Length: 53
Image (tube, rainbow, N blue to C red; front, top):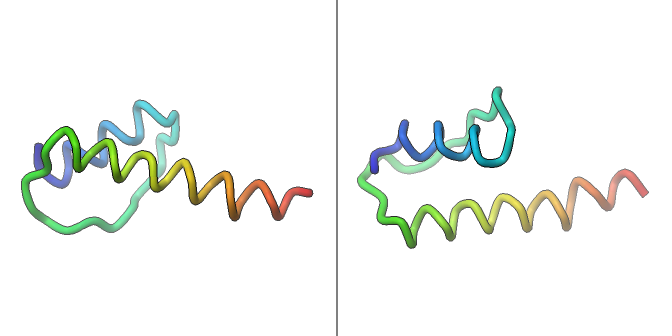
């Protein structure tokens, strides 16, 4: 899957319609996609939620 397909899928699966992350322009495997998604969720949990408390 290419860069735009990865970003579209992230927007849909994470319910972030205006997400516009910067990722390298290349073809991504399913494993690479899952790693990007896990990293984003982890970032949100560690940094964004901690600001709320």
